[in-house]
Each structure stands twice: as structure tokens, then as C-alpha cells.
Image (cartoon, rainbow, N blue to C red; front, side, top):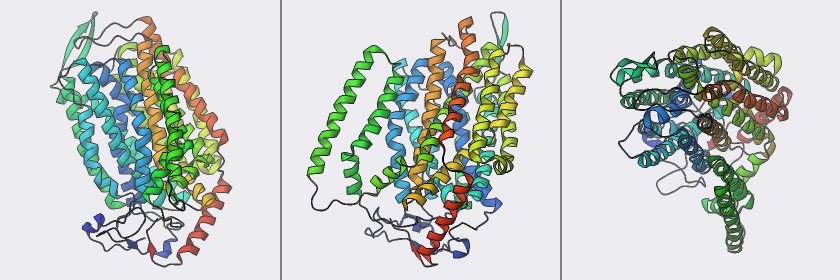
Length: 586
């Protein structure tokens, strides 16, 4: 472990991106305790594992609120249509395509006495809390004004989420060089994450009711319903509570963790060279334009009118890309400077295990968010009583935690890849069975949900451990490490899956003719709507789970390769350091 004598003010004494002295900002040096072999043989304490896990408890106070309540909030409380909400969740991902890599780029090049990634847990906690509260505030605007407000606040909260969660995720890749230890800490992380989810699932509706001034019983079509008074105030203050707790938990994560793994080699590069790469790389431009075009097509439902505009804009921007390449490429003075961003980007595109995990995460979270977003509507309208939802959510989370605790044993028997494939196929089969259930079969709904959650419990643990393995694979293959960019791109995959899943939820509700409440009173749903809710709980998410399992067929890293990678990297790091002072430059 590092011996740290710097005081708090040393946090702000950083190098520039070239690792050189930048005015008053000196190069930070840290001495490596070689008994840890760069973290390879260090057994992490339970305190550090729990402390790290609490960071995901904080994140899940937001993530699960978004998964289970955000679409409901927008349609039934805030007052915009399901289609408008779904389109917004897709359109705002356009900025994420730029924002997420920027955060990964900056995190990889951050130099402080507290490490590269840990400081972001302190720097970004308060913006994260403020934007979360603003997202669940309902202003007294016109419908158009509300839609603009929703676009702005949702974009800001996702920016804050990225700025704190990309470094948090990358931190797991540098806490230890041991894949076994990372799998262990990933287990702690997701047990803690699901505990945060349980808090959201069990307490949100009661908190909304409490802060909204209580509840009253109303009669709709001869049926008694519970309507929360002033849900607008209730959701805002509930999110304020979650935000304050999240700030405290991120502070605990910062104080209890350490960074141990440093890059194998150091690079020298300038921001000017990185900017030139961004301006002149046709491959980079086409990947960005292709992704943005796909989002735009999804957001507009492939409408004929918008299709021509989107394709036209894509062609114009492609021509502009060629012009920029010719202009800036012709104006290079002397020898072309080296760009570490270009290398990082190239390494990422040639990292096949990461590409597979990107597709897997996208498919799996699309299925999870379609189903998660439908649960409250399903119980409220199909089953006739939304009060079943909290118990349904909590029972699944508890079952998932039990499944997580078996991750290590199951992994030792099946290996990560095989276990993940079997789990997703099993979850898909059980989820599809919901299509056969009638509204009165509540007990069987709970049984199937608990079974699917138990089987899928180890999945998030293994996924993020496998992302860390893919970062090791990239370093092993390319002799360079870009943990922040790997986890930034992984986070973007997760956010894309959630955004597309949430958008599909909104589009599906609109397609199945969902009727939102009028003046707080629930509307009678048609048979088409009820059948659609059943599909959103069953066959639609099951299809995405099967696609996720198929993606993993192409995952290359098996257990023997993983051991070889760990051994080779340990030998390289030992040879490069020799127990001497490590200067954190790049």
C-alpha cells in the first residue's frame, strides 16, 4: 500500500496531462510498498470491501429510483406523455456519447496524492445530490416548459452520475491486481448496491406519501384506490433524503479505499495531439456519427419525415469530417505529436472481450429496464393493486443478494463465461412465463420473480469483474492501461441499455394506448393496454436476456487465460518498478 503523508491541500497540487510541472502544481510521487506486488498479493480488508460497496449503495439510491419510478413520475406526476419521456431518454444519450469518454479521459490523467479516481467521489458528490433533487422537482410551467425542464435536468443528473460513477467503477480496477480479489470486492459492491435498491423499493412509496401530506381513499369505477396527496412534493423531498444519504456514503467510500495498481508504463502526450486526433480521425467520427444517428432514428420512431433529415445531417457531418481531416492534417508543423487518446481509443476497439461485454450489458439492461419500468403499471392496472409492488421488488432483491453470495462457489465450478450464459437463459425462460399468469395469481408471480432474481443474482457481480479483466487484457496485449476509459465506455453501455429500455417502455405504453391519470384519478385501461403490460413483464425482456446470453458466446477470456494474464502483468510490473519510487506521470 502507499505511504501517504500529504495533507488535504495536497489534493489540489496536480500535474498537467503531460505529467510535467505546471506552475505551482508539482508532480506527485508515491512510494509503492512492494510487499503488495502492486496489489497482486494484498488481501483486501473487509472494511475496505464494505466501504467500496457503499459507493454503489449511493449510486443505486438513484439508479433504482430511475428504473422503477422515473417513467411513472414523468407520466403520472410531472405531467408529460409516455412517448415524450421515452424520446427524451434517448435524445439525452447523445450528450452521454461525448461526456462519458471525456470523464474517462480526464480520470485516467488525473494526478493527486489521493490517486486518480478516489478524489472524484468527493468532488462530484454535491453536484450529484443537487441534480438528483432538481430532476424530481415539478415546476409550475406550461407543458412545453416542463418538457424543456425535463430535458435539462435529466441531462445534468446523468452528467453528474457519469462524473462520479465512472471513476468509482474504475477504482475497482486499481484496488487490486488480483482477479480473485476483484471478484470478491465486486460481490460486496453488488450486495451493497442491492441493499440500496431495497431501500428504494420498500420505502419510496411510503416516503412520497409522508412528504406529500398523507393519503386518501378514492373510488374509481366502483373500486377503492389509494391516491397520494401532492406526489410532486413527495417525490422531491424523498429524492432530497436519498441525495443526502448518497453524499455521506460516497465520503465513506473515499475514506476507506486505496489505489494500488499503476500503469505498466508511462506515456508522454499533449492535449494538442489528443485534440488533433479528435478533429482528424475518420474512424472516431464515423463511430460517433453512427451511434448518434441510431439514437436519432430510435427517438423519432423511424418516421419517414424525420428519416430524410437525419440521413441528410449524417451525410453533411460526414463531409465536414473529411474537410476537417484534410485541413488539420495539412497544418501539422514538423513531426506529428504522439496522442495517448488515439492509442486508448485504438486499444478499446481492438479489445474483443470488452466489445462483447459492451453488447452484453446493453442487451441485459434493456431487458431489465423494460421489465422494471412496467412493474408498477402492471400491479396498478393489470392486478388492480399497486401495493403489491414494494413487496415484489424487495423479495426479488433479497433473492438476488442470496444468489450473489454464491458467486464465488459457482464461478469456481462453471467459470465466469459459462455461468453468465446459463444464468441469462434461465432468467429469460422464467420471465417469459409471466405471459401465462392471470391477474389473480399473485403468489405465483412472486415465486417466479424470486426464482429469476436468485438465478440472476451473480450476474452484475461477474459483469463488472469481467470489465476489470478486460482492462487487464488490454494492458497485457498493448502494454498500456486505460482503466478510466474502459469503465467510462462500460458505464455508457449501461446507460445506453437503461435509456433504450426506458424509452422502449415509454414507446410501448404509447403503442398499447396507455391512459394516464386525469386530475389524479386513474383511468380504465383497455384490453390492449393490459395485454401490452403483460408482454412488457414477460416476452419483451426475455428476448433481450436471450440476446445477452448469445453475446457471451464470443467472449474470449477463460480461466486459464486469466491466470496467464495476471502472472505476466505481475512479472512486468515487478520488473518495471523494482521497489523504487513511482512517479505518476503519463
